[in-house]
Image (cartoon, rainbow, N blue to C red; front, side):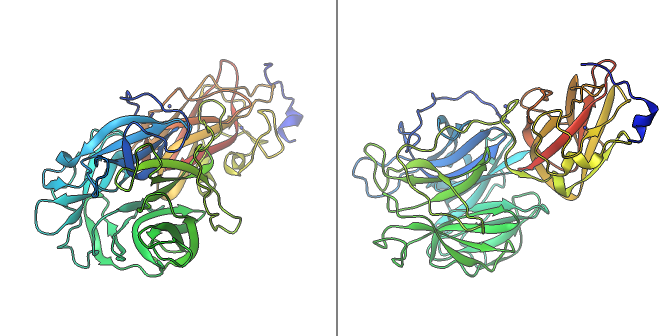
Length: 481
């Protein structure tokens, strides 16, 4: 690339966060996704370029008439189609105060930790409790975080059956937990430490025909609550079975407005599901009785694609036996996915050329190539060496991925020699560990996946130029975890 030679006149005229060795081999794409064991009550989580599913293991014998569940497994995939069973990552013994029933749970990341909320039978009075374990990676190891139940029958206004926790951390950092069975949904705020509750347990309103298994998520500023219902008003043919209904709200504590059915009746009597976005596509994970030898107490996890209408409503999921097609992402050119929160940030920089624009980096442009100037460009010519761009948000954001599309004008702004990402920890900038080297390829969206999510108000991209050259950026994204 030639160096820039501008006349004076021109001055007026820019992958597993927790990789671990799998104990099994990947299965071929199909539904159910794992058939070597029976799995149930799936909860998905995306970390970097990997989708994890946390699921209980069904161990009931053939013809059994009750649940036998003693451990939880973690399944993983980098394309949502081919899955690996990473083995049991928690079990009843993880909680010294418990003695039976490893039922549904969900993992929520926060402050570099992974909190696993579970339904489990304690040894004390009452039946089911909600416990919480913690680990340093999506695959653990996980240990009891509290030393006793987070929710039990002794909790004021607890559910008729304290099971099926779903936990959600909002953009402002406030965490919420919903749970409950026997037509008794409950909700409570969680403390910043993720192992204590804040305020009173409330009974949410508007969850029409709620039975159990809530799942909460947010999309485009709207809160969604999916849950199992067992009514025969368009849901199921027999009330022994269940479908998945959903409701929406503009506040995480409701009130909720019922919207319809996401997932119809499945082949098992129970119907437990979770929803996640992965590599730009939404997925629903659920269980059924379709694996060889399967049944109501020998269930297996399935995955299918899910679609939204333009008005934010959800199309009813088509259940398949093939599962979704492979959807690999990340790396040097797959593009970013998730919620890009860069447009809501204030951008600053060490230097920007007077004829270029800092506004280019987070204006939502989609470059055609690295020479594309149709939607503004950031450049720092004639500066050389290391320069930086920074995003600042008014409140802390949980970020697990970033992507950058480099500017190269063939006149002295060139692709960088290297780049690095840092975050503000409240007193200083700290380097972010990435799953691979910070990408500097041209004509692609370089996706940089964090080894673990960071919670911060400031994100900085450091750019080091090649000798004698300057650098530039067309678009820099930051993805919310």
